[in-house]
Image (cartoon, rainbow, N blue to C red; front, side):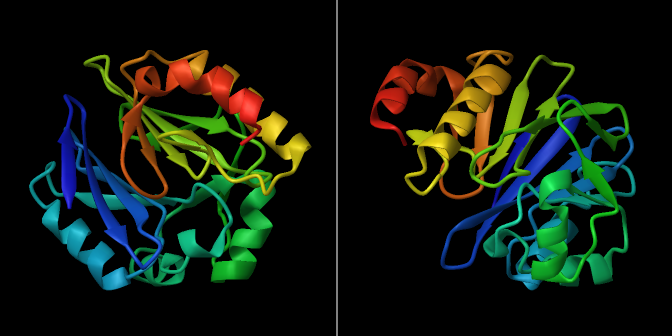
Length: 217
């Protein structure tokens, strides 16, 4: 498990399953309100992470569960999580039906580009990134310290955008959205926490954008 302690929020992270899915827990430090992002697999490990956050805020309380996109490996523990914590659920509107089909959990709050998720006074932007799936959403945390953390799902990784299965139109859509809505809006210092594997920053990846466009993946 790793943790990032900012002025307003603590972000905890674990990697689960043989696919190295990343699961994130955000806690607002002033209120203790918490948001779980991508209940991917291994509910016991996720529950342990939630328990480990007992001192991240006053009386920490899970108040929402968000899912970055519809793929089955990102929702395998969603039903267990929602049974344990019957709180509002958030996901991209275009992926909501498939998430319910995969997990048995309905999305109570489908989100669109530009929406914001409630976590006390912490601002969490919903950024729609079309291409990996129709409704993929990056959840972007903006801390009062100026720090920005992008929970990018499977749409942006160190070294490239997400898989678009060699479909030129899907790649063009995802590359355009990532370029405009992430690289075009947030600073180089913004941390990128993807759905699998290690972390990066927009500044580390920005010089590679022309190469990604040229290679088409």
